[in-house]
Length: 437
Image 1: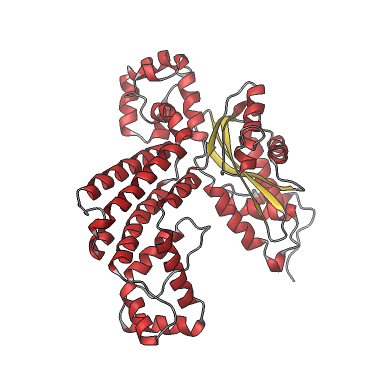
Image 2 (image 1 turned 120 degrees about the vertical axis):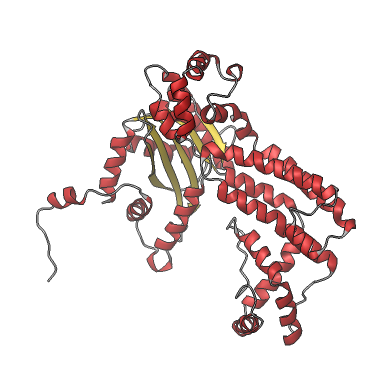
């Protein structure tokens, strides 16, 4: 069935006018390096196909050159043309983003040699997480994790704590573990801890537990501030799904940070619900102001590559309002014709963006259509790779560590594919039908 889906991908790939790839590498339970490559392609009818191009087991080193050879093999296997590649999105590992020998650089050079042009993106979700780590207040997070682990690591203590929450009719039935690799974990753990702070303190006093629960006003103020900021970061994380909206969400988040900074300086806590509940200490204002300033600077620095493509995002999403002078020379004449087309302007206002571009005549606006197809093909993050690695770890576990690479690839293909295998065709190709006894 996986082979049939692979054949369907080849058929669709032959019609792509533009495609992009998202790549990530991880090790499985047997310490084999697995490279995942996802493909998103768009044909001339603006039909979008997103599929797993393949998995490659990288033997020996996992340098940029090794990863490039694996990607090259997968593109050849799926009969994809280098010149049609529009973008590559990776995480921030040196083997991926190295300026001289990183995978993204080598792919860009290959596409250029074949007459194409590719944009390189560092996964926006990964960028956001690096920004989140700049928040600081590590002492608060360390204390929260220590207390939670103390409660949950011992079965008896954990049962007694849950029984206490039930007796006190608490809002939640338990505290959450913090997992560094899960990007929503930090905010959820902090919020749950803050909501159960009174119950945790009561449990500590009733059981004479050996862990300390710092509940002084200064520590509570830091905890509440951290909860409010990580809540905003969690909302941003959930929004980072569609490439054409990614940069808009990041810009909006920066404006929210600037608003929070102004409000905080004025002592307004309208957008700091937890800090308002806990009570802010005025002497902490400079520290919180510095945290917000640092976070704003990190966003400006880390999202530079997306900001460089801001004009392309705007052209794609707002073709009738963008200034002609801000787009490339080869698109200006077509853009003027498009902006003066009242019929298309009406369709743009009344239809979803993809449906609108399906209505744009390719024979009249070939370059505008090509630009739109490129934008639709781009990946903004490697989030889908992270999801698939979770599936890989579920399927190739300690009890199934001898699973072969080809079998693993087939399992992952069937798990994540949006295509359906042609069962009727597969059954007809069988020499004999084996019925159950």
